[in-house]
Length: 169
Image 1 (tube, rainbow, N blue to C red):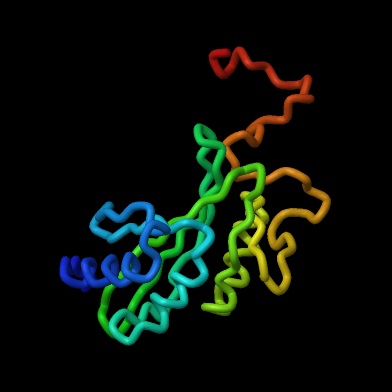
Image 2 (cartoon, rainbow, N blue to C red; image 1 turned 120 degrees about the vertical axis):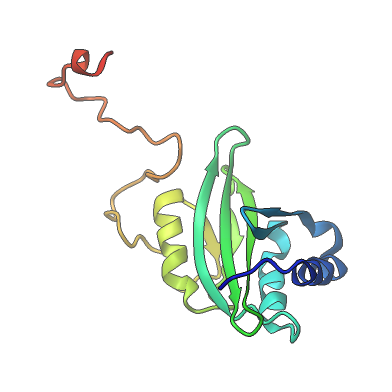
């Protein structure tokens, strides 16, 4: 069973702050999991530290997914990491502006990030610098939009056959 271990959380935060100082923007426990926000400039180094440090050993990338914050015009990436040795999970977040959505790839840290980054690119348009094959994976190659961004239109605006009165409009 997964447990919250305050000492383990404190160790993770201390090691990251000692190494990256102000590049660690925020750390808090959210929904029973330590959540650390890291500046995108050091995200790859932080992931290497979390994987390779003998006290931490976050050797499994559980999930990598995108986020869109329309209010701040940012795109983000969330990494869920698991240390099997310590039975501990953490969440790492980073973000980039929509105007330049570039974040270093995690494929050099965990090769399994390959498909997850391709999916995140496909749906959010986040460009992973250094990715070996950043191409669309689920949507058609001709698609120019990114359907999980909040500004993606949910309906076909060119349709003339629909009657909005059925939907209270």
